[in-house]
Image 1 (tube, rainbow, N blue to C red):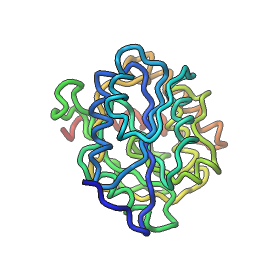
Image 2 (image 1 turned 135 degrees about the vertical axis):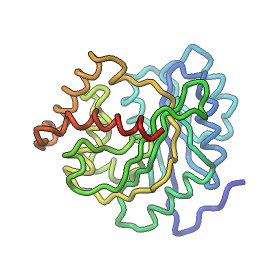
Image 3 (image 1 turned 120 degrees about the vertical axis):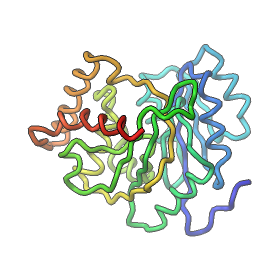
Length: 257
């Protein structure tokens, strides 16, 4: 049962970009539609051929907007979704991911009651792709301060919610950044522009294991190079150890499981 959004709670848009994600899209959409507060769910499909469109049609009544057309990759699709979003706050949930419980968006809405808050973030579990109750890595963000990024910190992007006006003012994902576009965006918002962010100290997203940037050593080297570029394009200078510390933080995530 959906709760009515009070006048004090902001509205929320959720953007899901998908291309050939039929296997996992059910869990993603269902986790949004069962929330205790209703969200505007925007699906941007990149021309799926594996049955994802059938899944979307199955849930069509729960979806606010569906676009299916070729795109230039996942971050281009996310930018399209952000432009179409009409709510006060925008979150992004990948087709492989799902919210951990039905009160996630209620927690998020409450975090934005204070009009000074521009962003919020929380914790995330990496889970087995098939047996999603099995936690592989536990990403506990902790509280952010102005130097956190310099010590290799970043929040998990699927838990990162932003006011729509911030995207309108500071822009969306930089497609030139490749798989580091989410890191660059959060670096731009939180470090370069110093936007106030609130930490929700609980797991709100389960992410199936697997990723573009660090599946191989070669991929990790490329990601490190793009991480460095993210600092450069924002006119920021990391500490000598910043980009080394960023992947090293994953060791602690494995130890928490």
